[in-house]
Image 1: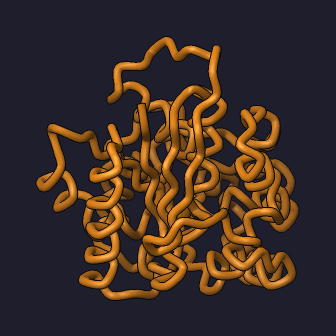
Image 2: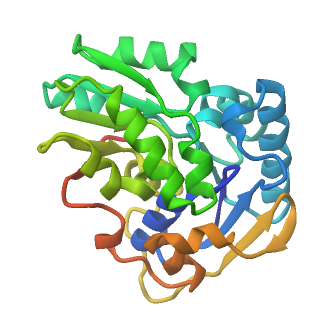
Image 3: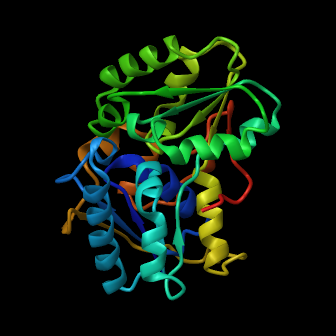
Length: 274
């Protein structure tokens, strides 16, 4: 059984890592788009076209499920993708873990790309799931791009900028871009002691397994990991090796839980709405 994950860059690593940890027997097809990256700064028609092109390739190669571990792409085109491929092929999108953060009863900040922060989608998500808690919407220009390039110095600078604009009373920070968990330790260091981070990668992986009816995965075998770069066969970009999960996936190993989640990070355990 094959699961395809589609993103413009390294934002798919965390969800891929969780799938590899939970169900190592699955074959994984990773479709990145270095020619069109980053999607966070692109127009909606551009993102939709690139997402559909990748999805069509994945289905032609036999993908049993399509996962979009990218908030920008989910915001932009997940409904249209579902109309085209479901029910034959399940389509799983990514939703920032606002509901889980709100359940803790704290003031919340949502860190995301400029495009996602400005979207009506994020505004609706906050209105529907923040449970009346105060929410600060923090755009993080340049952070996803720096993470994609493995440029930890630039990423640290972008993190410091976002942290400086995050209200001090926000002790729950939702990582609303799937790139950001790769820098979770640095993000935590930039925020007040006691801050909790929330991301959706584990929940998206578990939702994918539910949609595939694989509640009891088999750990007897290890599946293949194939990579397409804007449609070309290749390897994970060099930047992936800057992160433990990227190095584990490049080696086609099973990914241990301890490199997927820092001690102060809580994954959203509820199934994502998408």
